[in-house]
Image 1 (tube, rainbow, N blue to C red):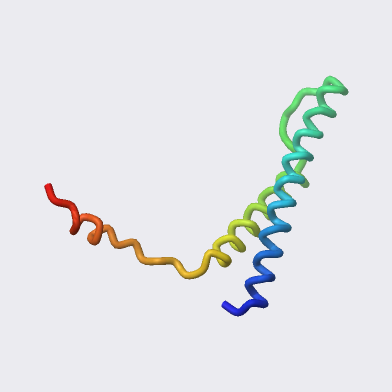
Image 2: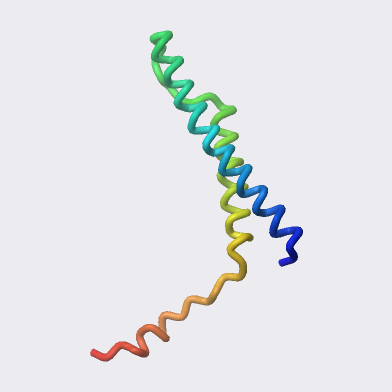
Length: 84
């Protein structure tokens, strides 16, 4: 992966994390508003739900790209060194 795309993925990861924190703050603020106005809580507004899903997908995808190539899982190598 070239340095330009790595820096872009790091930026997307940072923006995704900040957006997730904003979603948590917005959800807490919405609950506080409902308590003040004595309205029942049914569900979060759609914009908070959509922002949370989009932020989570962007964060997870960029974090996966930053991590690099996946290594194959070889459980047979771990069992090979065990003596029973």
